[in-house]
Image 1: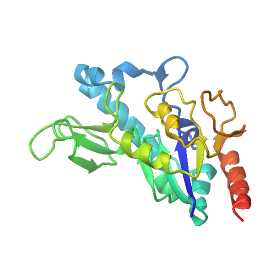
Image 2: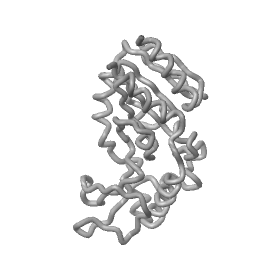
Image 3: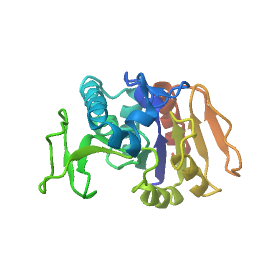
Length: 230
C-alpha cells in the first residue's frame, strides 16, 4: 500500500464542536495562552492550569468524531495512513484510526513533573493532590509553548516516506509543527484542505488546494485518491 501521511490541526476538531487552540486575539476559550499553556503559567498558578485542562477534558467527553475523522479511518482500506496531529483530543482514536502521532500531547493523559516517562491514562479531573508513585505532582500531558516536542523526530521520519501528503485544518503558523512540510519529498503531491487556505511557499511540490472544510474535503480527496490508484 502507498503511504498517505496526514497533518491535522484544530480545524478538523472544530467541526466536532471543539474550539480552536488559538484565536486571533491570542486567547484560548477566554484564557491568555501564557497563563495556561506555558511552563511559566504552570509555575505561577497550578490550580488555574489544572482547572483549565479539567474543563477541556470534560468538554471532550461530550463530542464525537465528525465525517472528516471517520473518512481518514476509512482510507486505511486503501492506503497505509499515518496521522500527525497538532490536536490534543482523542477524536482520531475514537474514529478508529490506527497510526497517530500527537505532536502536542494528549488531553486524556497526565504525567509526572519529575519523570516525563511516567505517563498515565486519565479521563477525569486532575487535582493538586494527584501524585506519582514517588509523591511528585501530576501535570497535563500537554506540550506547552517553550517545551520540546518529543514526537517531532518520529513525525519527520514518517513524512520523508510519504507517497501522498495531506494538510487539513491547520494554518501552518505554529512551529515546530509548521516546519514539518520541509521534510516532504519534493516529488510527491500535497493536498491542502481548508476553507480559507494560506499560501504554502518555498516548496517545489505540486500542491492542490481543496477549499472545503474537513468534513467535505476529506471525502472528496478520498474519492480522488482511490480513483488515481485504480
